[in-house]
Length: 210
Image (cartoon, rainbow, N blue to C red; front, side, top):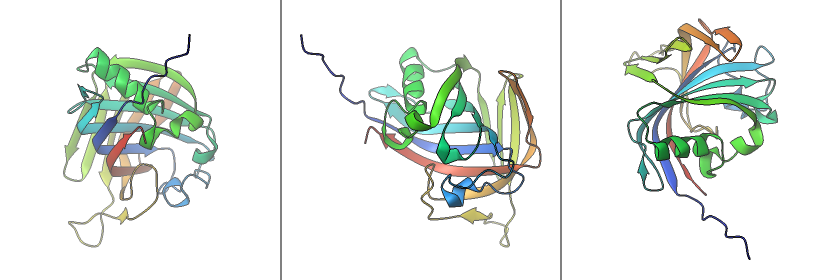
């Protein structure tokens, strides 16, 4: 009997991704597109994804939050990422599964490169993922596991933060420079503190499977 191949699932996510990492100055990955080593030789980071609008096939993802713990041993583009995912505990079973398909790269499209970059999913769990977005500040809170707060780097014009625009970076073309304020991770044997370290904020418009 011929094997029946599942048709690729259509999905999209619009919203915002922000992160705080172990680089001491603004992330070299943005301009080098992952080819330049992180300032500390490795990249430890948390990422927060606020999904303002989104779906995975027929399942609505709008309003859900996702947190990621990311451990990259060297250059971002060389892979061997270890990743843990924290998916909003308000998600349905179908939404939870869809989000894991998207963030593992299995769903293709914008995040499809994750299948080559991520070597190990060290954990995936439902959690209360709180995200705050107020003015030039962003925050993510996941129980006692992640408590991260960042703020945009002030530009010459008070209403326009420092940013990189029109880049080919995988997350999106426009990246706002930020820095960690209070930022602690304590999970999966990792104990990290990114206070004062590099952070970034990026509007996202991702889709798949193509």
